[in-house]
Length: 273
Ligand SMILES: [Zn+2]
Image 1 (tube, protein in one colour):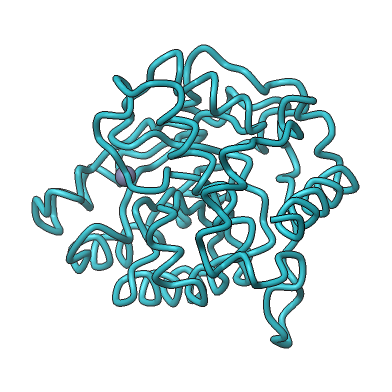
Image 2 (cartoon, rainbow, N blue to C red):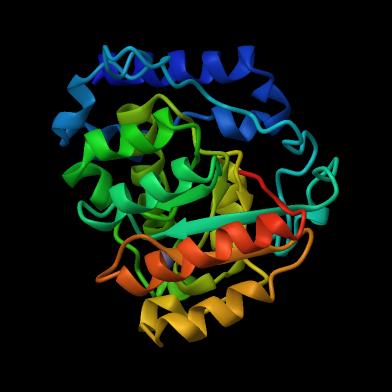
């Protein structure tokens, strides 16, 4: 337990060195219940700040160039990149991928993103990190942004008590940090379901709440054409929603293989949050 606490402190210190102190004192507040929950997991045994002895650089808390220093508690989730401060460069678009990592689809999506030299943002489920810690590290090592999408993806989160929301967000937060060395800075609620409690707990962890502007409903597998058509409506400054987890994502993969080069040809640059 003591080891876990000092590791968490070490992570926050790293965050402080990287300029994350501006995210607020709330972010550094130790959470008693997280220690209890985390102590049950074997992932705790792994040193967090030196996650894996691979030739690739050790991932560390990774502030985006325009990480909002002042925006810690928003009463509404971010839908467009212009809501970040300072705003990202013009002609930016952000691809977000939810519900992974998935052993079959996440590697294929990572290969596709690498092929097109695209950085994306992954909203990760803590339970999936527990199953696939190496794959989670692979996402971080490839330079993508790693974000919190709760521990168990409860669709009823907006009606949950503060205690349960703290468990969902805090457990995923610790698990992601332990597995990757990345302290998540962004949170997306399952199904985009928000409550004041969810927004408060997001802020307690120094994270920004993130929604989306373009939803192709790829999770429902509506067909490659429909997904492609919806994504091609994506414009400058918008956040696109897709999924790498939660089931068969072959349609998503095919659609993205077509959409990514097309949007790039329009002069848009894919940016991670
Ligand atoms: Zn989700």
